[in-house]
Length: 375
Length: 177
Image 1 (cartoon, rainbow over the protein chains, first blue to last red):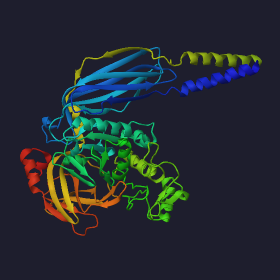
Image 2: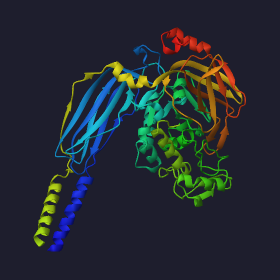
Image 3: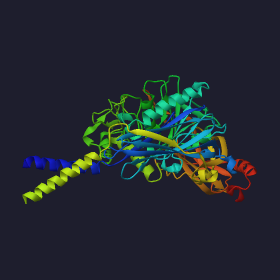
């Protein structure tokens, strides 16, 4: 009997501990579609969870107005858009029964030149509320001015503390912009809102440090040649990375640089993985690690490919990697760290991730963003 | 002592029952929704943070052919404030000069070194590079120094500034001329 009492007492203590520690409320929100340049219905979905006391309310604050190039404010044209004639609505979802998981949706029809900002807040039955980051996106037929069209924009925050990625439709879309935005959505969601797959886990984790933009037609990629016409040139000048999304099949190519351009074949079965891999080149200066390319290279002070075993081993401790895992890439004379698991700069599989050297270098870039300047 | 233990046990069991009763439900819960009437937003307040992050800048496309540099396109626009401190990799240095004196400078990544999948390293002798140079003051020349080059290339950009100031004579940049 005493044992039973002790068990129940321990159970009570454990349950109380669980109740207290499990009180954390989580909330996330996303809009769908991410960006479409025609009038459409846009839905913002907020999902909240509190497994101990449950959710009482979700509040979505939505501000919608007309996207402009800012000239209406009396100044020169901007690359980054402004908004006019905006209005705010508060959409409230109230829950009876304190559900542990709650979803709240708000839909509206977006006319032309629309720009929307939203933020969601979850209120548990007891305890502190939690809010999502504030996100801005565009929808509907855009202004003719050459401005960046927000897909996932932290509007209230300085761009220097974000990695700004522009998606540029290749000329091979032949004017079919909706096809481009559909393809871009697959890439963006697969790369940045996809914690479940290893190859996207780093970008999904650091999504608060990223702005995503869509550009109008004006870019063209073919092989390693990339051009930007007069309309999109200013956009490419201010984005950190320029991903030219193309539908004709050719071997993708990217600059190896800490900020630059590359191409992404949208009609492959895994365009999101391709983007993550190519951005390893053009955003993070990382080199290919697979065998056997005609030459290997990296850019910047944080490398994942080395010209000797000694250089690989020397870098390993600082990159939280094991020097014992340094291995030559075939017989190329280039060296990499290989812990045996699938690596995004080597293995074309969704199970790959940035590991050892590249894992450290990419993560460090986002740490720099947190310090106010990604580069 | 025994009574004390029993009381403690009863208290803990009561608290456990209380905790259980306070637990969240796995059921979806009854949902009621409400949307407020739209409230107008002041445009200046709405755009304040965005405007505060912008400065006048010279956006350019440089056409590079080995060591030759040509200004393919240029104009003055409002650009995001750049606090990038790029110090790594192959960098092109762009400086804005006024009367031969440097008034602004940035470094942008060169696009010379490329990798083509399943092929390898591709060095582009001919390439284009886009850059946005903040303009804290008017400039008359753009100076471009390629990675590894000893001598910079100087390009006149006075007409771009003049064109901007004809259109926006009251802008801070133009009042400094």
